[in-house]
Length: 433
Image 1 (cartoon, one colour):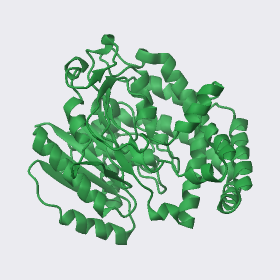
Image 2 (image 1 turned 180 degrees about the horizontal axis):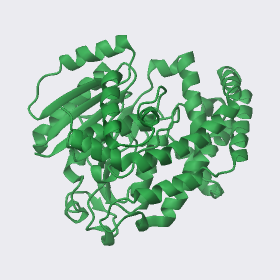
Image 3 (image 1 turned 30 degrees about the horizontal axis):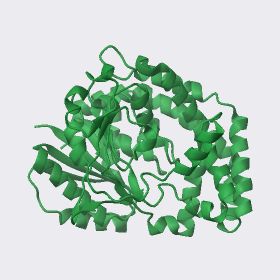
Image 4 (image 1 turned 60 degrees about the vertical axis):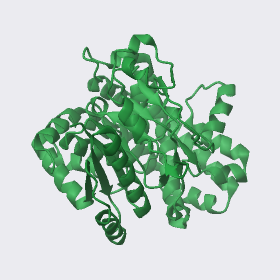
């Protein structure tokens, strides 16, 4: 029986999301005859962890659904054994990249990739704790339906199952490597307040996330569309497109990847950096691997914690590090776009060595550019005043460290890519019960 991994990484209270994702798992098992492993990777504080354990214990038993709820202690024990079995150098350093003490959007998903490998799964389907499902006629609309329909099948077969195809026929023989949708509701990045306070400051700050040299007419459109997902349109029926999926059209709360992708290359383990977990979406697109874009968008919302003073500062740090990481990431993406299909080996798999080389090269981006980016953020936030001026002080006190961290993050990512194949092999041989 085909096994798939539906994963929910979390570090905050989300019992309602746990119950909703469990319903999605049941839908997958019931309609597709697959074994769905619901994997909850929980980094929450003890009181929240206890609440989640109660929620998991109360889930109804469903044939074909296996639930794994793992706290950080269980994750660490698993990873330590896998890393030891892989035989790589500096095991403690590798453990730190897989399970850092700080928030890492890439690392939590990398852990899901390894657990999925140990479970013998063919794909990973990721959801987020601050999201819920749209409904139609009072019933939730599950993205898993499209993911299980298309993922891993030759694009030529999937062409007859989607609403439309925009895939170059030259790629029709390749299997679908990615299925994704976006989100509706609140912006994925909490910058709406900046836009309300000063639209010009908003353009200056969000403009830092765009590639250098972007034509002005494109720049304005990209700024207007950034972090907005699919807007606010309600779901009324399916629309699916077979294509090479643009990373700007999907969100990591609504994504599924075949193991042929994540089994070759991991995500950047950068800490406190939003957007770092979109790396594989760019890689799949640039390598011309087929995907399916659908409109079963997930409803995004911002938790109360993010709106608190401490949550606001923590998020501004993650946003600032994303803006600092942008030149390095865009350097890699320019390289992968230029490489195109040469990113694939003769068997159609991603060439990890080629990707690692591009990541290492990106670390050479001029340090001065990042200090100038921090200048823009500092100047913009002080103009906004209030809590943004406090955030400017917060970032200014960490200025040199942040610039150094971003360069180190890319070097660490290259190291993880080099070690990834051995980690995947060790995980598969270990298994997980």
